[in-house]
Every structure is written in C-alpha cells, then in structure tokens.
Image (cartoon, rainbow, N blue to C red):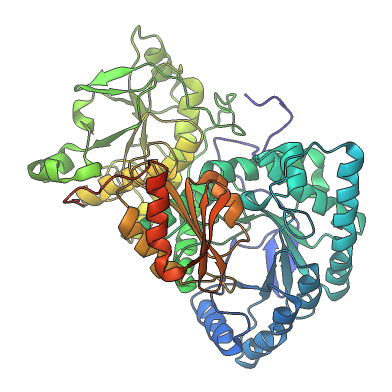
Length: 599
C-alpha cells in the first residue's frame, strides 16, 4: 500500500462523486465548478495556414468541440494566431483558442495576446532536456528553478493582466533533466514538475489555471492524475484547480479508442476530470464523438446505486500491483496466480464461432462462462461473501447481473471484501439477459464502455479473467476483450504502437505513415514502436518504446532504440525499411505468417 496514508484522491472508491473545483474561465467557456465536462481537440493544420486553420476550427466547433488548441512553435508563427482568431470570429463562431507552447517562452508571450488560454509544458518551457544524468545539489537545483521562474513569471503576469487562462500540462515523455534526476521518470516526478509552476502562479495571485498529467501508458497516466489530486487535496482546499484529461499518443482505430477510454474513462468514473481531449492519429474531427461518448459513459456511473460500504481498499491506487490470487484450472485452462488474464465468452457466442476456432488467430475464446462454475454475488451481501471466504478452496467469483452498482465500484467492493486468494472474472456490463443492461447505441459505445469498466480495474491490479457482454457479435466481443488486455499492458499478444495525433508541428503524414508501419510490423508480438511527428515528446516517449520513428526535420526521420537516437536524417521514403533493418539488427524481427486471420 501507499507509504503515505494521508494521500487520498477520491472521497469514496465505491460510489461516484465529482471532484469539486473552482471554475477556470477560457474565454466564455467555464471549466470546472458547476460546468459540464468540456470536450476539446487540436488543429492538425499548419499554424501559418490561416485559411486551413479557420476551416478546421469551424468544423470542429460544428460537431461539438468546445475549445480548440493550436500549436505555436515560434514567436513568428504565434503572430498568425491573431489572423486565425479573427477568421473564426468573422464567421460568427466564438470557440476559444488555446496556444500550445513548447520550448519557446517568447512564443508564449506573443500567443497570449491573441488566444484565450496558453498551455505550457513544465518539462520544456524553460528547463533543459538533454537526458543528462547528474546529481543536483540543493543549490544547483534551486539555481535552475530560479532560471525557470525568471522565464515563466512574465507569462503569468500577462495572463493575469489580459484575463487569460493557462494549462500547466505535464507530459511523461518530456520531463526535464532536473526533475528526472531528482524524482525519476515517475508519476511523482510529473506531479512535482507541475506543482513548481503552480506555486509560482499562486505566488503572483494568478489562479485561472488547470492541470494535466498526460502519458501514453494508461497505468502511468492514471497513477499520475490520482497522485496529483491527492497532493492537491493535501495542500488544502484552495488548491482545487480543474483537471484536463488525456492519454497522449493513444494511436488510431480501436486501439486508440480503447487506450483513451481506459485512461480517461477510469478517472471520470472517480469524479476526476473537467475537460477532456481524445488524442487520435486521425483527422481531429473524429476525436469529438469519442470524447462525447466517454462523457456519456461516465454519466451512467453517476446514475448507479451506492455501495453504502467503504472498506479499506486491498490495492494501492498510486502504485500498480496485480492482486495476488490462487491458481485455478477451469476446463483445462489455468487462471489466477501468475497466469495470464483469460478471456471468457458465453455458450451462445462459443457455438457461433466453434466452426472456425482454428482461424481466429489471437482472438480465440478460452473458457465458456456457463461451464466455469463461477460464483456470482452482490458484494454488498455480507453473508454471500462470508460463505465464499469460508470455502476451503479458492473459487472463481464475479458480480451478479441484477445489482444496481456500476461495474467498477462493484468489483472494487468485491476485491476489498473477498479474500485475495479468490480469482475474479471481470464484466464490462451485466449479462445481456439482465434487466439492468444499459441501452447501447453503437459498437463504439460498447467498446468504450468495456474499455472504461474492465480497463480501469485491470490498471488497479484487479481481475484474472474478462468477459465482454455489451457487444453481441461473437468475433467483435472477443477482439474487444483482447485489445483491452493489450492496451492495459496486461496481456501483450501483438505489436504495440505509440502514435501521436497530428498537429501543426508534425513533419510528415502521421496517418499514412502509421498505417504503413503497422502493415510492415503488425506481426511482431511484444514489440513496442513509437511513431512521433516531432521531437516535443518523441525522445521521452521512446523510454516506453523499443523502437521509435520520429520526425527530425521536414522530409527527414530519426530512428530510436529506446530513448536514444541511433539513425539521423533518413529520407522519409526510406525510413520504414530502415526501421525494419533496425529491428532486425536488435534481434526482434521475425517473418510474418503466410496467412493472418482476423475476426
């Protein structure tokens, strides 16, 4: 468990309560306080192209985007924000603009004149980022903090004078050397980096700001946000600043949506988050329906019943560790203990795919739930829990279908009250036959609901098997199950990709390049490849990847092993083949099977 019992990020782990914050005003849009959860996105157009930026911003606003972010790499580029703002206003749209700033304080000072909000990254606003390893004395550390403050304070004054908002946005991939060497590449390092900037804002009586703690790994992202909120709570009631949620470099397609739902959805389920951005390697307009659906999924949790019980959690919410259970063998398949998390299905779905089991590739069902002997109970029923705990043998347990608790809260309560030796079968929703099954309007909604409910629990270390009930199609429900396990880092069965969304900094076509890399490397089970449009987060996120493909200059690519650049300035039309060569050099390549079946 956490070494600091005073750290609490959520008043009740078994019942929804939205975190109470002060309101942060971004133009005419309020974030936090009594405002709804806001949905935002980022322009992919070059900031120098006024027409394209205005057109894209208007398209985003038309589909429900409430805040639009645009990159401002330099002071000269930031000057064009005036024309983008004017173009949007002349079209009768008042959607507020946010300038995304990295590396250049002078760009921020120009941008703040024209936009309603400025996002700064504490890891690279004024700090060094050379992956240098050194021991900082207190004096050296203080000297760098003083330099950072000298660069940052003028922006604070301008935001205050002009009535602008600010996001203090920490990224796991771009922590400064100073923070890395003092706190490590950790969620705590992310929090400390952001709090340094927040203290400066408060010293100058500026409070119209909010925080973010983004990472490409949902476990890291969840822990960082929880730790941030816990530290804010510990600092006092007036540290009640709003929170922006996002999983950075989530990727595209189902994988990007699932990874985003695990990170964003789990935090929304705990009442954390006042505005969200889903970062997909797709056209920005496709992010808005996903973000809206995640907010809708969270609203269902607010409508669920209350546990009315608050036992001490059996897991540490600030440090991942899988719940320790006993190993069982069910129908010849081992689960629990040190075994991988298994995928269940119903008898009806098994029968529907039985004739092609050998063609399902990596998406095979492993156990039929009706044949498993699983015990379903209401975790509020103390007699039922006591009966299972009194059993001499470990039992596979799940929640019953006819209860009015949200799955996340129900399984947490079950994990807290049930002896840890008993493995748990996680469900996304109640079984299809249940009268309590929520209405599902689309496949995407089923996917996001499953990823939120099951993925959140897996990131808490809870769960030894999973079943997706919310998607009726057998093949699709199995694919969702496995992809959730992959995105949560629980069961790696295919290549894992970290791919950032496109923006004005991007130095190549991210969508087509990601698809080209996926087509060439998608069979490399267990290999993690990062596809990054520029160097803002690229080198840092390489720490989580085995290999990286990063835009270094227009038409030129740098290749990484881990977080180390090893090949420079490769022509873009050669870069994918050179990436394959690099993977081969490090012994991670194998040829794809002759036929790869999908469902």
